[in-house]
Image (cartoon, rainbow, N blue to C red; front, side, top):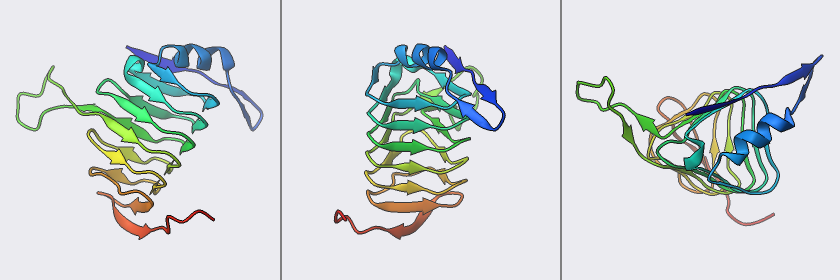
Length: 161
């Protein structure tokens, strides 16, 4: 089942449609505090979606959570991103057959505009996924990845400022 969350746009200001966002979030397995959905957002399999606290999801994001999706605390997901937990098998026949693998997004993660995260991937705490990246493998904590397929661009100091 898909839950589509709509938007109200007044001039250039995006306004959260609180009732629809609350409905979409009420269908999720778990939701922390201060989870913001900027519309439109499409959620498939909300019963398999777990949000931490202080999460911001941008416009036109697609969350395909049917295989299990966990999003940590203080996570930013930019507009147009797609996080996918289900796909089709490589070997034919593919019609009406799906494979699933959970995705885990750690705490303090930033996912850039139009990034794609594929099934079975874990994004470590403090990681950054650059705009347009296609993530096919796990991302280590405090690492920036980018490209197609995503590769390591930089590692960050893990000491708090």
